[in-house]
Length: 510
Image (cartoon, rainbow, N blue to C red; front, side, top):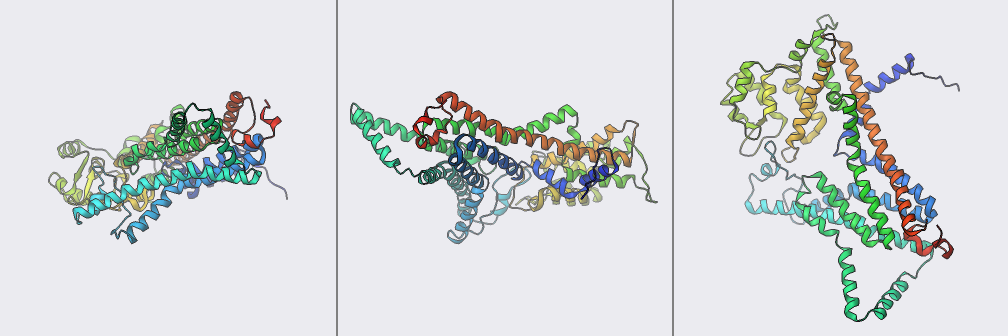
């Protein structure tokens, strides 16, 4: 079968590119990869990590190290990404069926806009409130400890036992006993030996202390949660390493990997935004950008179905909306507390029925607060006072629900107000980027479509670049450097953990 070549400048290529840009699935993928709370980005990186580490392991230690590495990476990844959630669900069942709690699925995060725990416990006794709070934090701590303990302590021992069985080496306990006997015989006294054993035991469990110091932050602080898990896992791996050299490899690998798992991709994305000057255009997610572009096109559409050109001033007025002097003065009079006000208090300042009706609908972007009722942010009140097409409650509810899902209006779920505010700011920034790109002072259909495509392609390209660089570092560079460090330190290319199973002549190879 003949395959037709498609050149970058050909009509067929442009059709394919346009289909990709307009494809909802492609935009969803980019948005999901950009979401720091999604596992998609981690899954992409973990695939590269497993492949790269396994290949390097096979190159250095043959099948034995390859088997250990792929088994450890696959099982560890499963518990690292989903272990806490899995134990949390078991905890929920225990709370419902054993402790007989009325509910176990709720958030305890809180800010001026959302108070899920107060909503949940508004009509319960103080005793039940304490039970629910105690259960929540205990469950989180235990779930983290269990997942961390398995990956950091149990999994390495399981892996080592499998290797020992496969290699036919059953002398581990005998050699350990001989080592202990040698220590006793060479020590000046039993006290000296006792101190050595005590010191070793304290080192083995040193990593777990980090978990208890930050356990109270695990519910709301994502970085703290990740660092807690990683500190525990890395400490466990170091403590259970078969020798010092293997432990050092674990320390280097896990600590250096943290940056590329959590920070490098977003940093690369921001760097590319800065270099290209596209921050306003590419901070918005592609799905929301498509929705915003659609409503902007409606402003250009005429009665006969054709599209007119708008001046930049009219475009901003009709889409983003502007606050006139009267609205600015009114906004100054509103008594916000931490940038939030109840609808009831807002009615004391705003008396226009149309604005009040709009405010009621806008307040549906978040659940009511117990004892307070409907609330709005300063940003939402400003939208109420504007007349732009993207300031309507109907449009806001559409794009917010698309991005945040059911959690948006669930009274038991917490979404930080900063996250909500940033999402809304991105919409305005996107519209401003389009206005700024209208060099001739006119915003046209062609310009809107061009900027929407540019936003998507740059977002996808920047995200891919960040992931590729992170994947290369995690899957290729770090494993190679890890092996190089061991070779330089020990003078041997053998895997430190498998040293006991190597022939004598290979143990001393350079």
